[in-house]
Each structure stands twice: as structure tokens, then as C-alpha cells.
Image 1 (cartoon, rainbow, N blue to C red):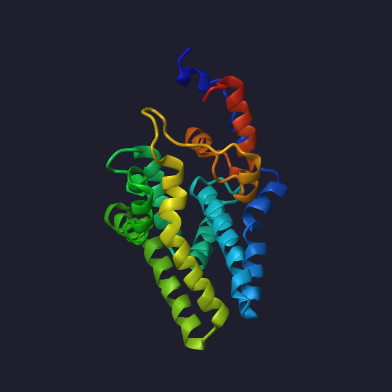
Image 2 (cartoon, rainbow, N blue to C red; image 1 turned 45 degrees about the vertical axis):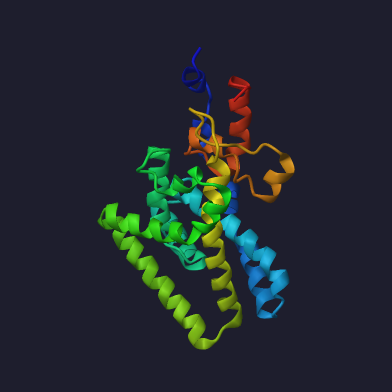
Length: 253
């Protein structure tokens, strides 16, 4: 039986339903790391704040990623608000990233997939490509997105500019630290969020997956990427169960 036929046997639709506890977790997963990083930075403990900022960035990626696929378990308005707030905190238009990410699922690995472009590069070029990647995400959305994406893009960019200007105007050290940390994170996102899960793949393989328990524990299960590409509507909190179900049907995948 062909692989595509076997994949149809995977039961996954029930995994898209979240309990109240799971909804709470998915929508607050960033807060402990954000608060910890701000408290430490406020007290000028920047070396201790840095790992917390990294974990905030990672969990925020998980949160917006679920938001892109309407997998936060909330209404469309609350999902929009989550993406908007994370735009402010991550220093990038989340709706611009959403536009490119959904095209990534549709067009990968073709020329229309602007998000996945760096997957074809050498690792060091993918790192150097980071700033260009951030620019392209916004430029492509403005050029190809509909009026709703353009509107959200402008709202988020203006809000980011106002937030950044206010932080520097009042001289808030911990907010300036946060802004710099997030900009650095965005510059490395092309490498960590795209290249690591798509580079050097064999023909007909769409993504890599990470199955080592301790690595998935410290990365909040963000690297079950093959599973995500196969069933993008499944929230990250259910991705381990999805992986078990795929293994039961197609163990060699």
C-alpha cells in the first residue's frame, strides 16, 4: 500500500480538540519566561536573563505557530490578539510570518516558498541570511498579501515602532535589553526555525523530525516537524500523540 494511502489511516481529527487546561497552557506558555527575563534584566542580571529570553522566544514561536494554524483553541479574535501581542514582544509582524508560513506549507520546496528559501543553503549562509529573511517576510507579505494581511502588517509594524521608541525615550533598560534580544532572535530564526528542519533532505521528504526525549523536552516539542507538515492542524501539545499514531501505521517514516 502506498504511503499516502497508509497516512489516511492515521486518526488525527480528535487531536485538534483542546481541553480547557490545554487551552490555558498553550496561551500562557510564554509568560513564565517573559516575566523571569524582565525581572532579571530589570536588576541588570543580563547573563541570567539571556537564557530566559531564549526560552521566551522559543515558546512564543510555538504560540504564534499554533496561532497560524488556528490551533490555540480560542476564537479568531483572540487568536488575532495573541498574534498581535507576540508581534510587539518578538519585534516582527506575526501576521507577515503567518502569510509566509502558510505559503511554505503550500509551495515547499518551490520558488514561491519564500520562508523555506534558506533550507537550500549551507548552514553558515543560512545564519548570514537571517536579516534578509526578516526583511523578505515583510516585503513578500506587502507585495503578495491581500488587504487584510497588509492592514495587519502595518498595524503591527507601527505598534512595534511606537513600543521601541517609547522604550528608548523613557530609557527603560530592561525593555531595551528585551528588544535587542528579540531582534537577535529574529536574525537567527531562519537558521533555527527553517534550516534545521529542512536542510539536506532526500527527494520526496518534506521535513525532518526530532524524536529524542530530552531534546524535545527543552525545545517544547517544536521539532516534530515532519509530523506537523503531515497534519498541520494538530496543536503542538498533541504532537507526541500524533507521532505515536503515525508510527503505528507507518513505523519506518
